[in-house]
Image 1: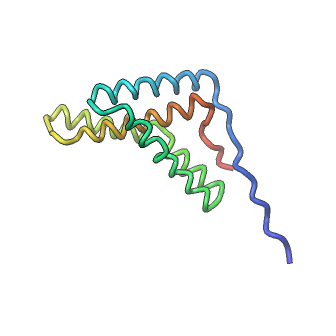
Image 2: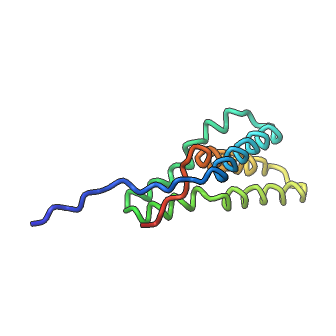
Image 3: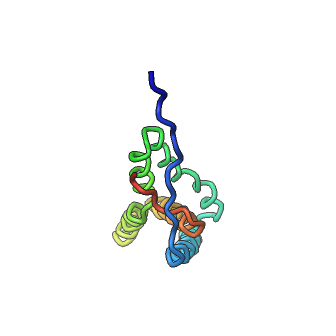
Length: 124
C-alpha cells in the first residue's frame, strides 16, 4: 500500500513592481468610487474577504483552485458590474447603485492584493 501524495502549498508568482503600483492606484480609485456613490468607506473592509471565497477551489486541487482564484481576481468581472451600473445610470434606471459598490469593493480587493504582492496563481 502506498502513502497518499503529500499536499504541497500552491506556488506563488511574484508581482512585478509596476503591477504593485497599479494595484495601489486601483485600490485608491475604488475608495474614490465608493465615496462618489455615497456609500460609507467601511463597506470596503466589510466586503474585503468575500472575494477570497474563490480560494475554495483549492479544496478540489491546485489546478482548479488556481483557475477559480484567478477568475475571482481579475479586473474583468468588476469592470462588467461597473459598466452595468454606468449603463443603468445613463438610462436613468434607479436602484442599480449597489452594482457600483460591489464593483468598487472588488476593485479595491484586487488592487490591495496586487499592491501587497499577491498575484495570479500559476496553473501547475
